Structures are given as structure tokens and as C-alpha cells.
Image 1 (cartoon, rainbow, N blue to C red):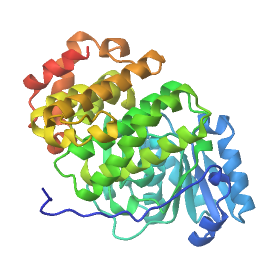
Image 2 (cartoon, rainbow, N blue to C red):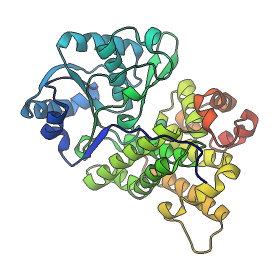
Image 3 (cartoon, rainbow, N blue to C red):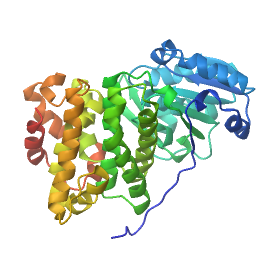
Amino acid sequence: MLPEFFEFYNPTKVVYKDGIATDLKPELDIIGIQKYFIISDHIINGVGLVDKVADGLKEAGCEPVGRFLDVAQDARLKDVKKCADLVKASGAQGILSIGGGSVIDTAKAVNILFSEGGDLVEDYSGAHTLKRPLKPHVVIPTTAGTGSEVTMIAVIYDEDNKEKLAFPDKFLLPNLAVLDPQMTVSLPPKMTAATGMDALTHAVEAYVGITASPVSDGFALGAIELIMSRLVQAVENGADVEARGAMLIASNMAGIAFTHSMVGCVHGLAHTTGAHFRVPHGVANGIFLPVGLEYNFEYIQDKLARLAPVAGVMETGMSNEAAARAVIASIRSLTQQLNKLNALPLRLRDVGVPEDGLMTIAEGALNDGTSFYNPRPMDAEELLPFVQNVY
Ligand SMILES: [Fe+2]
């Protein structure tokens, strides 16, 4: 059945090539500015990736005019302010961010203050408050998970008020997303597994979500097929450039899918588990994805069944219910394979969640913004047994 209405807006140019992050001249010439401010973090800088990209910038005739490397695990409001001041003082004409979701989200928020001035919270809270394009932003992701290089949202942590602030705005979509597997080969197995499960959850939740469209479905299906067939390889052998490339492309496609059709209760559960018990986002998604699909099962069965071919579990004569259950089983099997590689925990007790915290998690998922988009109405009492299942 077709949706009554949908829109698709994806102005970010995506380029993929092994080694392209240090060989960007044709793309930078099109953007047409020379002075870039680099935003990254100390881990990425420590493995030499920032220097490599900065050298590539110079070879392309551009000038790296400054660096900010203090992005923490969460993109923090105070860092956005500090970094924006440095960018303004540097004489930069645009921003180049190299990192995972926190770095990219920080850079998106910095670009608001750099381009438009003002105060992030006072002037830009709410959705779609920007009136015109921001200054150029080039993104080089170093994880294959968030898809933030193609999403129209920045999530920033306000440490003083202990809350995560979301800034959804189409003008936050970067100008250029550079997918280079060389930028992810040094990612450790646990990070590879967790970020890969985040990408898979984006794609699956976007696909079965209530605001999915045939266009977002295309991106989600492509992402799911790549992740189901390549994530284990990328975890087993980080130097496998083919598997790394497949995961970067998949994460990008999953990002395009979910920025258009949103995510549901698995992300709701992961957000609240992260906020209360500091469980990393991708790990929590990996734990909750199978049971979140089971919670929604009656509402998504027919759609989920259509994932059976891309998950590699379709058999002749299978009913929709059997195909949908086989899809969930294949996702569970993937998480078990990752667990055997010591790359992904499977239970909440193994990531420091106390048993008396389970109701907090179920209730927290209800209050998360994703609950509006979940196929089955959210009910904490009904959700609780599914959370207990993964304790
Ligand atoms: Fe996510």
C-alpha cells in the first residue's frame, strides 16, 4: 500500500572510493572554498587520520586553518560554543568533520553558530528554525553506524541540564559525505560490531516504521542486505577493505532511510538505557533489536516478511508469519555470531544494568520521541516482558 504522502530530500553528495578521503581535489574544487576548519577527536587524531586528511587538503590547494579535537563521547553543548568561537576566529570558509556521530553532530551545530551567530539553545531550539543554507560542511565518517553524514539532525548533550537536545533541520544536511574504507580500518572489533548494529537498527526500524515510503524502503533494503552479509567479516578482519566499504555504504543508506522515515521502540529503549545506565547506543540497539521486533510483531509481520530474501532466509512456500519469524531469527543469529567473536554483549546484565532498572527502561522508551513512530502503541507494562527477556 502506498503512503498518502511522503517527501524525499537528500541534497548531500555522496562519494565512495578506497583512499578518497586524502584525494578530494575534484570535490573540493566544486565546493569552491579554500579555508577549512577541521573538527575531530583525539582518538582519530591519535591514529594519524586527521594529519592524513589535512595533508590531502593541502595537496588539493586548500588550507586547513585550525583544528578542534576535544569532542567527547557525547556531542556537548559547551564544546559546540567553544569550537564555534575558534572557527569564527580562524578565518575559515567552511568545516570539515572527521569522526563518528558525536564529531559530525558537533560540527553540524557549530556550523549553525559559525554561519548565523546567536545562541544554539535560545535561537535554534525546535525543528527547522534555519532560514537559509549554512556554510559548506564536508563530512568524513570514521565509523559505519550513525549515518549522520546524511541525516538532517544534530543531537547535542546539555551537561548542565542533563538532557539531550535535538536540532532537526534540513539545512544541517552536509554538502559532501566522503565514504572511504581506509578511515574505518582501525576501528576496533567491538566498535565495529556496535556501530554496525546501530546501522542495521536504523534500516530495519525505518523499513517497518509507520512513515516508511517506497523511496526510504529502497535505501533500507539495500542497507540491510549489505549489513547482514558483511558485518561479521568487518568485525573478524578489520583490514578487509571490501567489508569495511560495504558497511560504510550500508550505514550511509540506512541513514538516508531513517532520516526520512524515523526509528521506533528499539531506539527508544536504547536512548533510555544509554541515558540511565551509560550503555553505548549501538550495543543497546544490538541487545534490543530482536525483542523490539517481537513487541511489534503483529503490526509489522507482513512488512518484516519482505526482508526474508535480503536476510537470506526466504524459503519456497513460506507463510508471511514464518518468513517474518525467520528474519528475526537471522538478526538474533547475527548478534550471537558477534557475541561469539567477543564483540557484542547480548544481555542487559552484562552491560551493567541492574534488574530493578528494567521498568525504568520500559517507561523511558514511552517518553522518547521515537515512540510516536513505533508501529505498535507503546505501553510500559506490555513492553516490560520483552525488556526482561534480554536481561
Ligand atoms: Fe541509532
